[in-house]
Length: 411
Image (cartoon, rainbow, N blue to C red; front, side):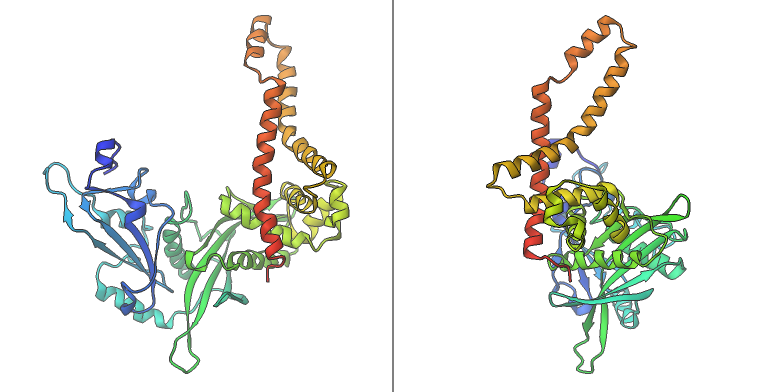
């Protein structure tokens, strides 16, 4: 039930889905109720735009994932269930969870502890799909990255389960058509010791990335990052940067890559991408402090494109971040030069709008021109807007610069 009134929202029968739902990742049946639980970032795809669940008091919904195969077992707990009006039924939580499963994979959700135990026993023989392309340590974890470049029923089913999980973590996440050969996937796992004393290990799923290889005239391709997910227990250790860098390195080795694009990036991914691209461009002489102070150049653009497949827009952003890094905040002239350079870039779209207005002047009557003039921003408003955009931009850059100072290299 998608409830909107204030009275109902504050009712004891309406639970905030963001607080009620928890995710856990288990390896053996005894892990249930003992392993860490993580909050989702979104639940609207399951419980509506208000992200509320009606009909239960003190509700808790724990979605227990098999940590390798990604089948899941929901546990629903509450102290009482709504029965005050026979015409109003509580939300059927299991149905809502089932509805988001792909139609050909209705077995990813299991409803009994016994079924889930069977899944956990079966996943002891789990082996990752794809080609192993990288191993590295991050914090206390040993990670492995696998590449899947060709469709198969096995990867189709596995990605369906991973992308179901992504509904809780990626805004507007959706299922990809893995039968389309232009999809490229990277899977990351933690390789863990079994604790048996014999050196045996098992894998835990840590995340994935899906890229679509668009055609670029005349004989190139332009990979676009469509989805990327790293589970919360692997964040804050530099793992995401290593994951993205590994993907980059694999793509750089492909001769027909034009550049690497990103589809509707979230703020966290923008920050991640900025950091990785800046780390890479710091190794280029074109991005030396002396060259940065001379302004953005074609040499920078071409070097970033040829070496790291960074497109023009992102290369300009990398330049601004790295120039900000070498700008002396106590030198008024140095700071002014940087500020004007960034503002010229921010003002460019506004100048284009002004050209469009001049073209329209030829087609408007005097009365229409007078009315248009009333609605136009004056010069002071334009300057104020530019200053606001500049301050917002610099705040974003400060985060990346701080990370670069603390972690100047990715690996």
